[in-house]
Amino acid sequence: MKNIAIITGASSGMGREFALQLSGQFDEIWGIGLGEEKLKELDGLVKGFRGFDLDLTKEESFEKLIKLLSEEKPNVKYLANCSGFGKFGRFDEIDIKQSANMIDLNCRALMQMTEYVLPYMSEGSHIVQIASVAAFQPVPYMAVYAASKAFVLSYSRALNQELKFRKIKITTVCPFWTKTAFFDRAKDTKAKSEVVTKYVAMYDPKKVVKKAIKDTKKGKELSICGFIARSQVRFVNILPKKLVMKTWISQQKLNKKYKNK
View 1 (cartoon, rainbow, N blue to C red):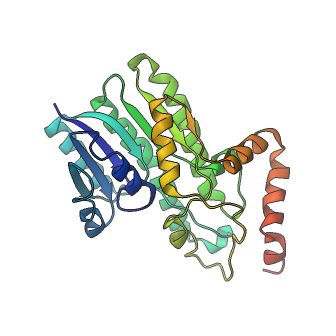
View 2 (spheres, rainbow, N blue to C red):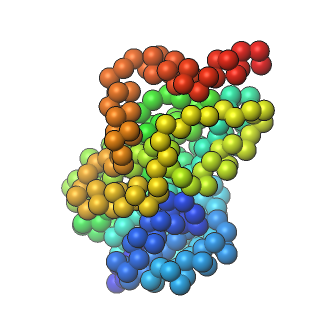
């Protein structure tokens, strides 16, 4: 029986970084993502890599995955759910279909991947779920994205307790701003000016993933890379959420930006 890792969002960003950093640790690494050419780039870089060009917002993609798992019956020792995206803007600047698609990918697809793969995981296996520091607070002008990541955090923490009897551990990764292609899609809305203009800090995805892998091995429930990220989570957990939102809006000068719109 092959010991494998499955990584979603493997064609770019943190998913790609997980594939690179986990190379050689498993018999095979299955990378799921969008863009056949981007996945092919990993063939010579990741030992035992197999790419699957699948859109996880479509049910037929899961049907293909279920069939593949049933036929090969691998021992999935590592699952990293890295697929997801966000959008910046007021609710009426983001197409409703895009917001619904965000929920489908960030929440529903993550849940489906987790629960379709779990029957093929054995004692000592690990699951990594990519959430965000935004999971700990409501974020105006990123409302759906932050809410979707709150789902990931809550679901993963609860499921981690349910899986104790199987000795399978879930680590939820909550990055701060991280330098990936996330911003290209996040900014692509009807917003007429920049919504987020102050980032405070921008982390390297290599460092975020390196810490996540280390924290996973330690069996940690949360992985938060960097002093600024950890400090933000600590403060938003103790401050009134109304104050947290007011501070965010003031920091980004969003009241001024949207006052006459």
